[in-house]
Amino acid sequence: MSRVRRGPAGRSRQVVIIVGVVAVVGVGGWITGTQMQSPADAAAAHQPPKAGSVTVAVARQKLTATVVAQGTVEFGAPQGISLSGPVGSSGDDEIAQRVTKLPTEGETLTEGSVLMQVSGRPVFVLRGPVPMYRTLGPGSSGEDVRQLQGALRRLGHDPGAVSGNFREGTAAAVGRWYESKGYAPQNPGVADRQQRAELEAAVSSAQLALLEVRSVGGDGTDGGTVTTPQSGEAADLRLRSAQRQLDQANAALNAFEATYGTKVPAGEVVFLPDLPVRVDKVKVGLGGSLDGEVVTVTSSDVVVQATVPGADGAALREGMTARVETADGREVRGVVSRIGGAGAGQAGDRGSDKAGAASGDGQGAGTDEESGEEGEAAAGSGPADPSAPVPLEISVPDPGPLRNQSGGAAKVTIEVRASRESVLVVPLAAVRTSTDGKARVQVQRNGTTVTVPVSVGIAAAGLVEVTPDSGSLDVGDQVVVGQ
Picture: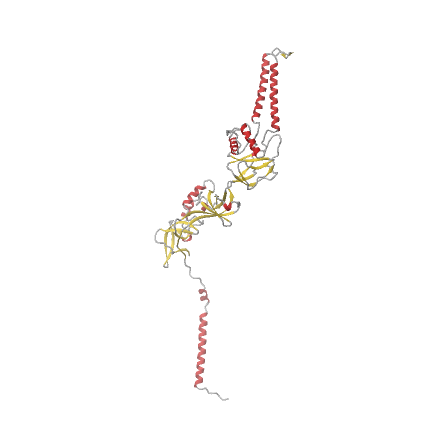
């Protein structure tokens, strides 16, 4: 085989190709090398960046500190009602005490209204602070009689003098009142009439006995009939005995007649201090007996009952305005009418003067671990147990959409304190308390952290008012809230 000879041009092309291949391989190796990392380099590349401070800008705005709670819509001044005695006569008829007409839930009762019926007899509602505790009738006297007379006069049935003594004028007025309502007054029954007849018969018998003694003469004659003569001493003794029996019979008859006439049975009237009232819950059934409470009534005023933590309750006082929001977003205005139990108003007054960082959303400014002494001092000025819940009552003068929502939920917002103008504010977490009890914030400026002493004011919605005691603090400064 003969060898092919290459000229100078062929060898040059071969050199160029070889150099090109080497260059390509080198570039590929360099690229591959830059994309490859050792395990140590890979781990180092995945480490998180060095942590820095979390900052928030200082702002200027108005602040309003509020206490917010969830409450229940109710009617105010609930009270249970029990009957003080039987209705009707407790004598001859032996009336069974059974409910024959129930109270109507939601009904408004005014003076003279019929609450219910028992054995066909009415139970009336009248205004008065003294509860009904006995049957009132001829011979009765006292403040309860005066209340009855005043009510009769207000209802248009004049009893005469409002003297507290139940006499004929009062009895006549009671009769007219019952009849105007379609009921018969409680006049003497069969047993009373029978007792009266027996007492009158006893008086007659005593009178006859006295006449018989007097008719027997000292000579022993009685209408022409000869009798055994009696000594003067025996005749006097018999005469005195007959007279004493007549006096006793007359006294018993007079005492009975003093109470004989139209009466108001103990169970037929309920005195309530304030009217009108609203029937809230009926606690008896038709045909049921009268053991215990028969009904619960309330005032017609709408209130919202709520509970807040002790720290929030210490910032409140009676008379503060409240905003009440229904579940469907409608709003009405209310007033704080009760805080907790007895003496809670004093705690509310103390708290209202210090409604600062502890008020609003229930959070306080952040503190260093060394600030225990200040925390103890602050706790001493509030309730004994800051965690104890505090009940509130919010009265709603114009209930509007709440009027028919008894038992429903409502949101209550009470304005505790508000700034008069825009103030410097920072997040609560930005404020720290040092061991000397002074509040401070840390401000980052030009890569360095500067401590600025401040005084704190109103706190609300996670923000707190601050005023620099020294140094400077301006809108836009970055305060440290975390690391």
